[in-house]
Amino acid sequence: MTLKSIRYESGKLEILDQLLLPSQSQYIEVKGVEDGWRAIHKMHVRGAPAIAIVGCLSLAVEIQPEVFTDKKTLRQEVEGKLNYLVSARPTAVNMKLAADELISLVNALDKDETVSAEQMKLKFLSAIETMLDKDIIDNRAIGDAGAKAILSHCPKDSMVRILTHCNTGSLATAGYGTALGVIRSLHSLKRLEHVYCTETRPYNQGARLTAYELVHDKIPATLVCDSMVSALMRARNITAVVVGADRVATNGDTANKIGTYQIAVVAKHHGVLFYVAAPFTSIDFSIPSGEHILIEERPEHEMSHVADHRIAATGISCWNPAFDVTPASLITGIITEKGVFGPGELMQHHKNSSDFLHS
Image 1 (tube, rainbow, N blue to C red):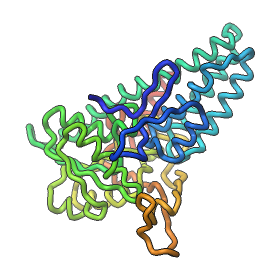
Image 2 (image 1 turned 135 degrees about the horizontal axis):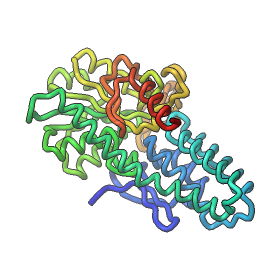
Image 3 (image 1 turned 45 degrees about the vertical axis):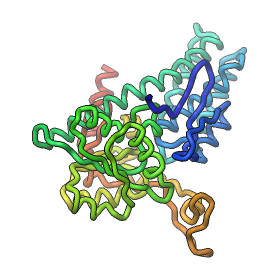
């Protein structure tokens, strides 16, 4: 059975509560934007693609039963609530890009005199609903492209060992996953010998979520502590590291879960391939480098406590950035649904695509 973290049908939205995993698999209903914002901010749902989808769908379920008599009111409501959803977790760029695209859509529909307020609402809802299917299609393309790229560096018919960090699978997307999608594709090709997933402190997404998905799919895997990566690469002959991304700058610098940067440094030292797997929407061409990426800082409680039990000395201060930035110079390639690019190739591809669209 395919693991689904997002259920949406007939205007009803439910998400798998990731705060309860792996001990409980329980879905919670999202009835509107306030529920969506809270689910994202409190990390009931996480992963940049999933954040965008759940955020937008929370708006869809809220406005679906509403009747709008004029388009201006609909446009203003959509703009305000989409911008509010962006504030829930600002580092993940997918929500911001989705909001910008949907706001552009409602502005265009508002100006189109042949479109009624009801038609405008239906077109807007349709645009949001297609995000679910598109995300899964894109993830499968990412998985296939990544598997091909990794295997191109390996002897024919050889098996590979992959290290991944944080969670980038069905729990972080609409389905299949980005970095975990690459792992699933390698597994389906019968070329995957083993996966190693980090625990991903302090929130333990690797131990709680990635391990949950790997066990669910019966993929051969082993959990390691974050501090074991150097020893692992020295002892176990890792073929490649594959991680996700919350935001990629124009030059290829990549923001991802805290701990990614140090894995990239260690991979470089050991001559291990280091790939970032993410939809093209994770690339923010409005910022030139990683220095411009806003890094979210999480509450101290996430570091000092485990399941409400204090593990840190009382009175100690905590620094808890949720993400770090891996320099482009440490990245072998960025795997997208449009192909695999060297970090320095992103802007040229973007320009070529823009030229094609406007020719």
